[in-house]
Figure 1 (cartoon, rainbow, N blue to C red):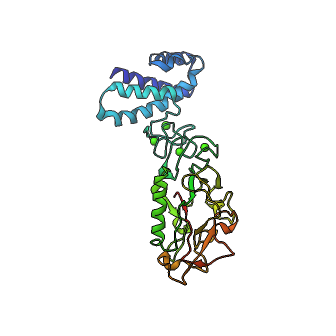
Figure 2: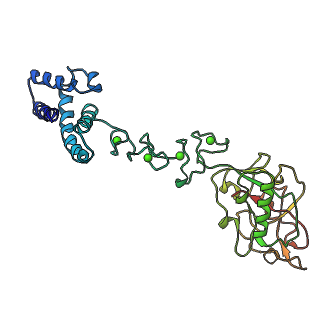
Figure 3: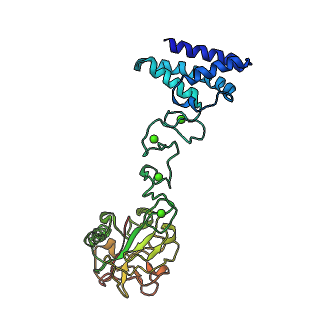
Length: 318
Ligand SMILES: [Ca+2]
Ligand SMILES: [Ca+2]
Ligand SMILES: [Ca+2]
Ligand SMILES: [Ca+2]
């Protein structure tokens, strides 16, 4: 109790002094402040007459508010220490739940996975912490684009041409997906169960159905196919998708697609009746796996083609 009253007294004196006190009273303040632990020892008693006065006024109000909220949790000491921190710093205290000074935020916790970091900076791409709630797939804290995690916090994805080929009947699009997953798994590729076939029917097309990534699409040998989804679907690709799930080149192959370079179902759709039949004369549409223009998915010279023929699939990590 006495110490609190002394504080109050000092605060009161300081408030008055803020309006103009003789230096002697200022000395009194300096003495009482130096009696507080730690921080005040560093401050100089000569320059602080004004500063101490304002700080201790705010300290007094904050201290009284603090003692209300602290009252249930006990002790004069806690309320007096809180008033001393506020008195001596009077500036931003990261973690106190109030946004002050240069703090971008202050949520009063040290959880770095929420929107406010424990450093009182707003969470975002580039802070080195993956915030999947905000759409970050990765966050390596740098702006190097080709190290697996780009400056948009999007990761790389693999694309391959299946090592196997089949007629146009393979259990619909879902059958092609299953085949992509199983080949990816057998080859030890990451996230094998996310793979989808680049293929369209009446209810599927890649544009609606794939994650449109901001990250790169790479062949399994590391070659760049596209820098992101927009690059993938702009009509040309950087490397032909002619490498299989094991990283091996497959030459002069075709792939069932029925899909435009934009990732849509072809306007002249031909999909072997939803990829369920090889009956003559049903037809499907193909892409040519050695091409980097739109023909990679929509070959001009032999579409549509009979479903009894054989072709591969393009498989995309999603
Ligand atoms: Ca704060
Ligand atoms: Ca936080
Ligand atoms: Ca982040
Ligand atoms: Ca990076």
